[in-house]
Length: 525
Image 1 (cartoon, one colour):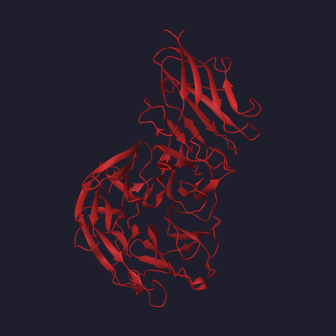
Image 2: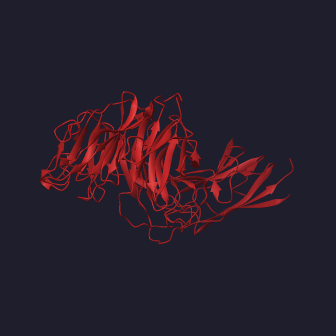
Image 3: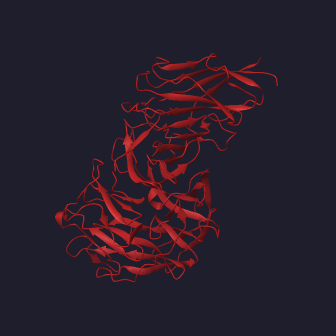
């Protein structure tokens, strides 16, 4: 009988393009596996290995709405969260939830009419969009005088026309924020809105009278008109210009028109380029990373696309993932050359989780990876906000994750002792003949100890059946390498194809090194 040796030599290529095709460096799927991390927290170098990652919840029961914006600011080391039920929360530089602010006001602070539709820090104040108005929290520099002031957009500070609370499509039960805000290089904030069926961009600008940002400085209602029927969803800087994403689809079930981009110089009466059409009905977020504009699009049912704007009217796809919905504008971020965004999965397990593209080191190949599994556990779960807040060592970058499901909402952070719930599935090995797996050799990134627990499965013939091998723990094995032999693999017989799955379920990290060696016999049909 012919023998064949299969080597899994790298996972840096990320998810393979299809279920049945993968390269030497790609794989079928994963949850909370990050090759961008060192082998163990005390190491220095990026490992490129199969490193499981744990996150744990640090908020309590106080968060009752989906976190939509995680806001940092330059006056203090405290960060803030604005939720879909109109509440402002805060955590300190130790990533611990705050119970009161400097004025002894209890968190959460309720914004009357607030719904999390937009938020930004600008000139000493945090601005919080409501359905038809904007409130402020600050000044951040005033210590015990810090306070919430509601309805400043239509009130004495700005005295402008009310916003419109236009209904946007819902993703996982939460409406796309309709008043996303962006602080631009001209030291003004630009705000998404829809007026009489026409997308518009407002301009908010302040100056100092007594303290920084306390006085209106020629803010403008309706500084830019988009064509009728285009609803703006996000704004990003593109040099001195703005790039604006917009949708024509107001439904969560019907495609009513393609999403598009518009470019505006912030001075002219109209945009100078657009519509630049996108392939999907919904575009939800833009992100400028190192001068490149990345675009997150998809639909309200399933599927998320990451693209890059290449100038003119050209947009190029980078990666497409069939599960989840495109992320909200507050659920995208980047560190180095790595982009991260919030999503969800039902395969290989159900999660609200974080995806990445690229690496903190641009020399490492870009690929789609799933790097965080949140603690969301109920139905309809999704990552609704995230941000690289912690200035921790870039050896182990740590993202703060806001999530929600039908039962609970919360915030998670990186944990070296949290419960692992990581899964990794190899690419599909297409044999196209009767075969038997004889042995599997797996190098480990740590010496087996009492806290390790790793389950290995062989999924056979289009995932129609599977066998579970002896658990990798210190009872069944020892040392830094595991070998499964014929006695373990007696029923590992297929007629078409197979893949191998690893799943972690302990609180002690056990990375897997590469290459993994699989020896099979091929028989005549």
